[in-house]
Length: 130
Image 1 (cartoon, rainbow, N blue to C red):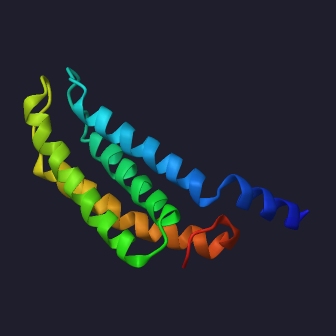
Image 2 (tube, rainbow, N blue to C red):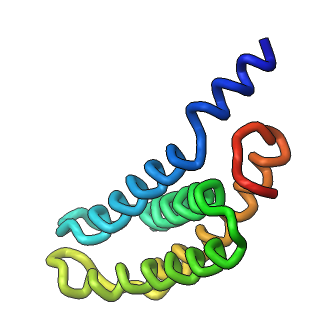
Image 3 (cartoon, rainbow, N blue to C red):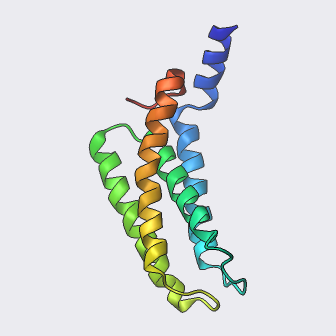
């Protein structure tokens, strides 16, 4: 049963599927960042959303891309995206620029490394490299 489980996981979560999830997450971040908002931030819970979105983005990137130099480049591109999305929000009605949000985005990317390593240590059949 365990062998079948590993084969199913490997089949369904191959690098191609991780890249699809990575792309969907990326689109979600861009769209969610640029939608006009009239809702106030409640207890800074939006920081949790920023952290989770960028953490999952980089976790998926680590599963998607194998050579280290691509992973490093992806990290810096994602960090640039996080800062750029905050800057672009200055042009969106109901949104404002927040340095704390940009820092939270980058912190989420760093946490994504921890998530990736934790998943890889418990479920090595999921793909990616160590």
